[in-house]
Structure formats: C-alpha cells, structure tokens
Image 1 (spheres, one colour):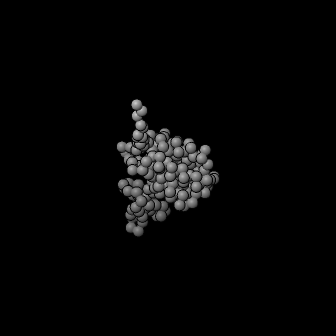
Image 2 (cartoon, rainbow, N blue to C red):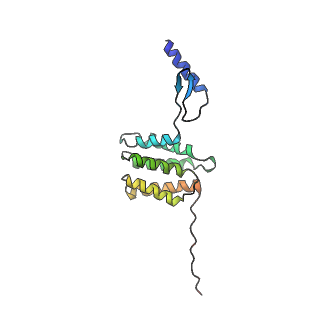
Image 3 (cartoon, rainbow, N blue to C red):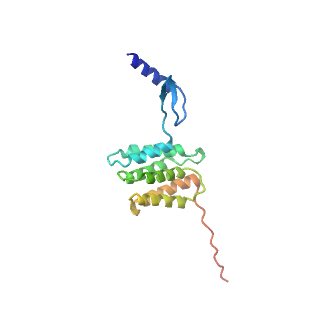
Length: 172
C-alpha cells in the first residue's frame, strides 16, 4: 500500500511541473522522470518502427506528422492536411521496408530540413529525398506522389524555387 501511495504521489508531482524536452527531471530524491522525446527522436523511432510490416500505419503516420509539425517555425507552418497527406503517403510506401540506419538518418535529416527555411532549393532537397527512397527500394512510380507532396510542403515553408532567367536572343 505504501508503494502504491508513493507511485501516485510521484505521478502527481511529475504531472504538475513544467518540463522541457529531452532532459530527465527530478521528482523526488533519487527518482527521475524522463520527458517526451524530441521531434527528431520521434521521427527516428517512427522510421525504425516502419520496418515492421505489421505496424499500425495510421498511428505511425500521425506520429510522423505531429513530429514534423513540431519542428516547424510558427511563421511558416504548413497546413495540417498537407503534412498528414505527405506523412500518410510516405508511411504507406515505407511500411515493411528495411531501411538501413544510414538511410533512416538521411531521411530524418531530409524531413527535418523540409520544414525549415534553409538555403537548400526545394528541387535539390526533393532530389535528395528521391535518392533516399530509391536506395530504400521504392520504385519511381511510388515515389512520384511522395515527391510531389514533399515539394508542395516545402514550397509552403520556404516558397517556390526561383527559376533562372535565360538569355534569349532577340531577332530583328
């Protein structure tokens, strides 16, 4: 009974204190409560869970979408339906695929960069994603929808790529 009361007290103390991500917080002497993982860690765990063919596709898709939204800058936050559509399509195609740790890391970095304003062009970042998906065993027909959604997402965050102006000779 004493143990049960201690656990309840421990939970109550942990719930009432504000916390920051990724740091253990003391809740009592010699007791620590781990906090929610960062969005990058959530993306990593989601990508790792996608290797299991029987995993819950909808749960993993939602988890990925929430993690990506958590990485966005408030002034450049894409619409929720756009993020969920991208996450749904990506999750559907990656479910059961055995990506290596290096591929998962590259994919996480690409997804993280997608929701931030950076100097990388949308086309270059989309090309990098396409390369990651291709090395992961996805065919080009399956990646087309994902890449299209990715570019829409990226354009909302950063804006469209500038097209270079070509010099066209004027004929007289």
